[in-house]
Amino acid sequence: MIMRSFFIISCIGIVTLCACNSHNNDAQNNNSSATLQDTAQVFILRSSKVQKSVEFPAQLLPYLNANLYAKVQGFVKVIKVDIGDHVKKGQTLAIVEAPEVNTKTEEFESALQSAHSKFLTSLDNWQRIEKAAQTPNTVAPVNLEQEHNRMMADSAAYLSAKSLARSYQQLGNYLIIKAPFDGVITNRKADPGDLVNSNTLMLNEQDINMLRLRVQVPEEFVATKLISDKIGFQVDAYPSQMMYAKLARKNNTIDPTTLTELWEFDYDNKSNLLRAGDFAHAELEVHRIDSGFVVPFSAVVTNQENKFVVLVKENKITWVNVHQGFSTDNGMEVFGDLKKGDTLLMKGTDERAQGTTAYWKVINQY
Image (tube, rainbow, N blue to C red):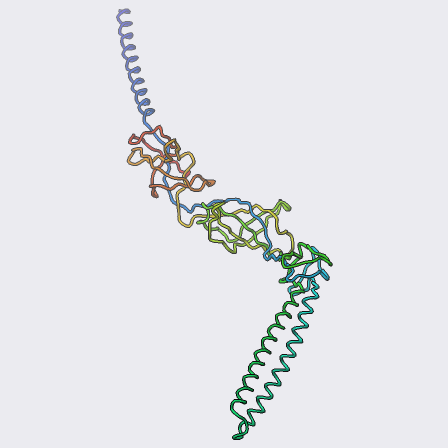
């Protein structure tokens, strides 16, 4: 009896163990099926204003810059300024002495006086004869005509002498070198006694109250717009200080040598803090005029053939060729056959063949 009870209990235990093993195997098979399911992390593409902060080398230049040459040949009589001197517009900077110019000026002045006197005499004679001719049979018409022609000839000679005298008076004014604008003398190349001519550089004057910040902007950025028309820049002389300049002009052409466009910013330098010629580091905050797409760097696949992102549509994998735009802090700007709302793999790879199935899970960080 005891042996029979033991046999029955043993059979029940074996059946229970088999049932448990069967249940465990089913659970493992279900877990394996879940593990084998291909779940891809994706994000939903959205459009946005693509903006980027870029830094370019720049240079500060004077707002006005004039090289002052001697206008006639002569000897420097006096130089009234030196480097670093601040001057006003119209101020006399130097005087050149040219005796032959002075002599010629006196000669033409004398010729002018002579021509003027001769014209006045002929004018008086013609007026008297014209008045006498009002009495019939007093003056022959031919004599009246001759006096009129003589007066006209003397008048033309007088006007010619007057013009010539004025030209030499102007030439005499060229002996005085004057400041063309308010500024500072930055260079001096002549001293009293030097022989100078029209090819001799005597002085350089610059207006540094306003400085031009020149930035060579690469071609890929010329179609962008500044977020603000004011940009910040730094110079090595003041490494901890940020200065600001305002966009004033663009040259609207691409330099074929550097493939850049020149942008100029005006900097108010009335404090004379900065110097013309300083090199600077300009920070430009730019953005695309139209909205675009920015994707994670990991989403873009580059192989030997092309560059693409992996699109998941109806659980099917599709490669979409793209070309790269800006690299931003948030990712890479891309252009291609994409639209807002597309589902893209967070980590693109060419190991996922086109047409294969992929179950996806949306990542909210993009």
